[in-house]
Length: 349
Image (cartoon, rainbow, N blue to C red):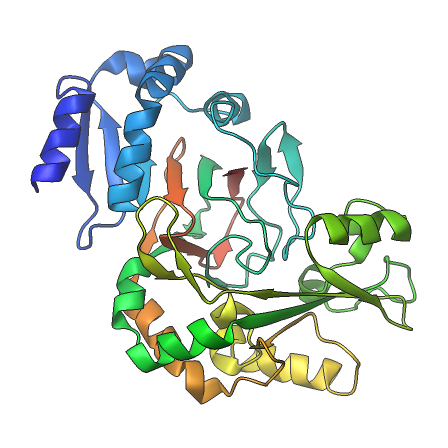
């Protein structure tokens, strides 16, 4: 590929090597030849900053870059790279899944239980403001499983029936999410998975002050409503198709496939559990509809799951790996795992 050869020459053939993981093109893997870059974290950070504009160009072409074998050993090394990017506004306020703030711009990737698979998604596509880039850093890979799953959403969009794409482009998507009341012994879910899946609003908005929560909803363009059980329901209508701001590509950009309540998204057992627990309650943790509130039949979005499955690539982590992702062009997820796993993330605008 001429474009890859051109980027390789710009980076310096004596310093690094660029190539693809087999059998698919995703991600582009960059590995050091110059031993200074693999041994000296300050030298790597300096080299990275010097080439950051080039990496941005490469990201537009390839969607995600995997830096493997460089001097990245701990959160401070990762933070040195994250420091060069503009931090995503509001961080993870109002986000869908729980994650702990580690330092400055760095968060844990998620606290969703290890036994659960996280479906392919573009980060915060369910909100008006979302990060344009993500960086993941693997401090410690799991002993089994735990791969990050990647998917080229440009390829997914090409696979989707044109009629489906145009239907959702016109209709848009209504995201409805419910956050339970702050945890007490009385309202704490007995199911450990549900404690993370159905988050309390004080955790999601980092405050136990309802007025502050309401202000944060306004700031992040979330409609909100307090329910009689003390929970908070928020909603937002977003586009299903987004034109990439730099390339102009029309890309399937939403979280319809992950937030729709069905067995293909949640697994047979997970879907049955949600049906049983939330069947007669006023709100579920997640729900998606057409922009006008019309329910979306599962069979209508079956081609979306087919396209995602056809294009997904599972990337096994190695200690010190860093993955830079274009959050519009590439979706990510996570396979279940066993053993300790420490993967951290930074969100960039």
